[in-house]
Image: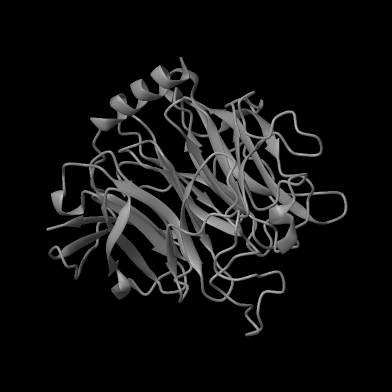
Length: 382
């Protein structure tokens, strides 16, 4: 039933188009290997935006701002006041209001999911996920409730993750950072450095890989993760792809498999920011762990990720796009099957930290920049 609901929602959204904003339209040109890029400013004035989600029926987009606001960008490019009913977030360091996704059955239940950092009694924080119903006037979330909490809470402001992805069967995946506490990524009694899999209401599926094991969190789907900043479902085969920050060097792209250990901090291609080795590291490959599907020795500072599967720009088919915070560009990885065969860097002319990228229902890419005066851009090929 979950699978049928999700497929129906995807089919409904596939035919939608998002109008180009008239009032705020400012067009720039940028270079690419496939032709000139057209970069249209949809809206500016966003405060460190983190993620976006498209509403159906040309109603615009929901955008999170890390300090704690959820905003609506209308199809005309108008930016709303902050929506009411959003949970209070712990907006310190890398923490705040993070990802946003819609329920696979949004047209019926109007449910919006948010991930965010939440403080505990001892002043340390962790990632939480909750959901609420978007009002018909698009001005508030009603009946917001928390469905998941990262335990224990260990972060002093670093490495929360987190991305939210529904798979084809309607399960919700949550990517979780290790709160800058390296060994916890290998501890199965903790939710740091993990990818978890739950039902949309927060319950744990009986077929999760570690269900029933003593002193192991049943939510865990995969582990050995450092600081996951992007995740997306491959539309060609339904696999979950995740990217994460390495330390100094060693940013990774991984294909997430059930019950697997992705190595951090035992296996890494990076070193500490001080230049010293990672104390726990045993090499770039360690027996019993999966190495990265693709690795960057020099860290771009990977962030949001989107597969391109529209017919609008055929040159981008078989590509996955990843935002980059440090190198300040949009990375296009060309794929042959699952293999990365070519890399291209785009939008360097903007000189802005790219936090998120999503494919719109109109076939354009939509890009958020993580700045104090952040922007949302609509990107296509001429």
